[in-house]
Image (cartoon, rainbow, N blue to C red; front, side):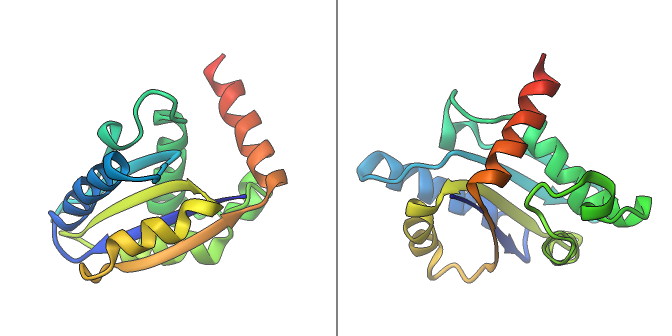
Length: 156
């Protein structure tokens, strides 16, 4: 199983700082992140996404996955979409998507991390003390297979 963990900070630098801590922890001990992205929500409300390449390296899911998540989180409500209804069951429920979308306000930053379930607690420990708002979504093996099929098909 995998988890999507979202750390939200009420400033523009908190998520980048946590990314740096995770890069260091990964270099010093057994911490593996499958994929990660940084989101900064500008004061005008516009989200800016960047792939956390230093944290995950080359084997990551990449821009297609994060672009998809960003669209769901920040534009689904505007488009009038229900995550489950519009896109089928991809392992993300409407409540989680709405919570993340509303949690990342203007001037906030977020670090979205896709991690194997066995690594989730290690990632959470690294965030201790920086007091982010933390949201988690677990993907079953079936959800992972559906997501993988969607993203592999979109890369062809």
